[in-house]
Image (tube, rainbow, N blue to C red; front, side, top):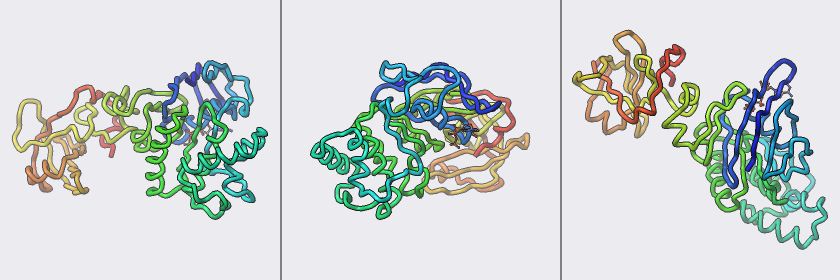
Length: 328
Ligand SMILES: Nc1ncnc2c1ncn2[C@@H]1O[C@H](COP(=O)(O)OP(=O)(O)OP(=O)(O)O)[C@@H](O)[C@H]1O
């Protein structure tokens, strides 16, 4: 377990972390999720010892490491732009940490072979980093970080510089890798889909604070506040109630509790159909239907429909914040 207690960090008079506490369970893949500038990397770097906290403590597996230098914390790091040794082969890059720890050569070779197989680079040992794709390089970085058997793996947007398709492949690969090696992992990402799809546990950050910690489903279904709700998925606002647009049903007849609206536009997005509407007070709102629901309603621009809120009422929040009138 990593336990962060009451950590604060300032850069001049700017507050990057304000009294932040977090527990990362043993063996979990936990994501630090939040917008740019929310303090995710700063928190990760403080856990790793690359940055000092102004106040608070960091305990890793029972040891207070608050004043321990990074190389003595038992941590593996991977950053967005991985600094590989260009003049060394993949084998030597991955084995580097073991070599400087004076591990016998046969042991290094065996461990590097094992790791290269785990990260799917079995046939690449003799290549140089420049002969790898961006995704392969990041997998090499993971192998190198894992080589010294770290207690904790810290990943700062490890796939951030790769194109969307490779990023999706690598995130699934990371999840499988984690299921295999079980090392306690903290992943910084600003991508809610990435966090929801691979993390066991997500800490949502905003503005130097952790807003909520929970499993993906819990955060999506029971967000603690409008920020978490809006950051994890689309939100529609109907008369001060924030709902997921797929929790809005459209009816062709009024009923108790329904709300009249006019269809402005119907967009077919594959399985999903997005219906943009205008409420009678002129406020925009949108609903997400399945293509089957939409086909049954035969909606077209200009139609008058009635909105009903469906789904779990815990998944709704009440907010008078006008910035959330129509968040796409
Ligand atoms: N060394 C520094 N000196 C001054 N300000 C800094 C320093 N490092 C970070 N900051 C500021 O602290 C805030 C938090 O930065 P941090 O990198 O932790 O955010 P982040 O959530 O990881 O964002 P991103 O996703 O953009 O990396 C930012 O406003 C940043 O400008």
